Length: 354
Figure 1 (cartoon, rainbow, N blue to C red):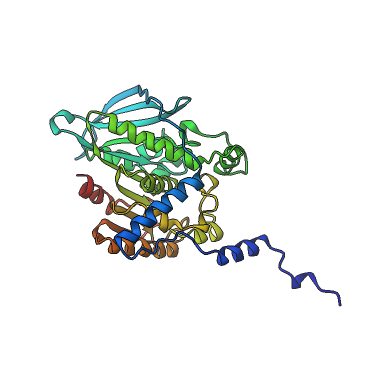
Figure 2: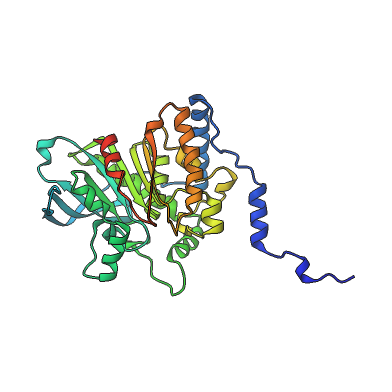
């Protein structure tokens, strides 16, 4: 008897979903005590570093140079600050452009907390600074996403560093019509085993080095804030670098199943190969413990699945309860889409960094 084609499922999608369903996450965080958590943490961090690939073997000199500077005196209650465009080196042949905001009169106030403000897709560091360059579409993009949080934190008296990630802003890849530049960056880098996420994390570790080297910054009070891909970078650098004392992760928390399989809400440059063999986004977030972390997620999200955010947050929240530190984790569920809320974030950072 001849079978009909419709009796078979030829789909790669079905095959992948079935294999994912069958795969047990070998390093999911199920700690029931601080001792179990410490054992899990060490194992998961080692595995995550293995999956991301090796970082550069040594730190080069930062060699920070100032390209531009001006004094900014905001209208209203915002504090004045010195805005500098700087370049520093993450690797010997890798310059990183960034904006550095330093409150004026800093010598009278003593050492201040330092804050990395990380951008997502768009126009790089210009977005988090609120620079639209007279373009109405960019102005509306910044307004809608409440995207200029680097400027907002600068006006609140923090030493702010806002760098361009690899592939964005002044470090942008050439556009290829009809193709996602992030996926192109991933494919090209992986030809020789270079994961763009790995190198962006490394750049942020060097950014922390830079903040800690500044005489006006308290090296023990460093925080990170980011939206979208900036939230991805905030999650990973906070999980892997314990110098980060507080994190605000806006518009990223979910499950990889919902984020990648269902919504395609993540690009190649935010990807960790084989991650679901070992854990999920919530497990990476658990590596931030016991340090304070705030998650922002809009109830009307169209980029990050909100149901996945609630599920993973509960897992992270349980760990902080096990550690006896429930006050150090919180979720700002706001009525909005994919944007920086700030409703709790500014007070959260002030509470834990001062």
